[in-house]
Length: 90
Image (cartoon, rainbow, N blue to C red; front, side, top):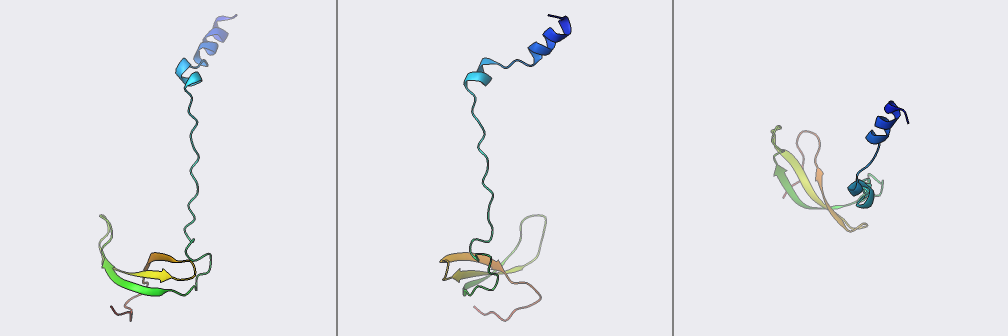
């Protein structure tokens, strides 16, 4: 065996821990974000609570959000109210 081939062979070897204690990585499942709406953006829901929240650290504002219950899918979720001002009342 030539000397350069011998060193290439040594660099390519694995340790015993890598051979016998090998744990394969689990693939992450992709999150589906629109389960509550089932790809129907105009689904009917009921407003449970109106909340004004402030965002996380680098941003600063008062975000208007609503807690919504969708009876067809039986899901409660938070939704943001877009635009300037709204006519929802507590």
